[in-house]
Length: 129
Image (cartoon, rainbow, N blue to C red; front, side, top):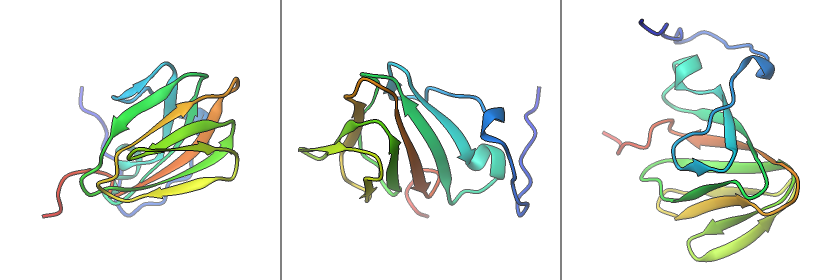
C-alpha cells in the first residue's frame, strides 16, 4: 500500500485533534508527540513542528543533533532539561534554543502532564550536502 505524498508548495490547515499521538524512537514512558507540520504532512524538508505531552516520569533520552537546531517552548507542567552536563528546571513560558552538537534530554519531573512545542530545523539530521 503506497502512502500518499503531501503536496509541496501547498498550505496546510488542520485540526490538531485529527492527528495521532506517537511515541517516537528514543522517547519513553508516555513521551508522546503530534507532528503538526512535518515532512510527512507538508512535504517540507526544512521544518518539523510538534506538540509534545509527556506523562509524569516520561522522557526523551539524551541525544545530540549533527545539524538540527531546536526550540522547546513549555506550555504546561514542569520538567528537567539537560544541556550537556547542566540541568534546568523548565516551567510554562520558559523556552530554550538548542544548537547542533549540544547533548540534551527532557524529563517530566512533575505530577501532571508536561506539554511543550518543539520546532526543529532542518527536518532531517543528515549533514548538509
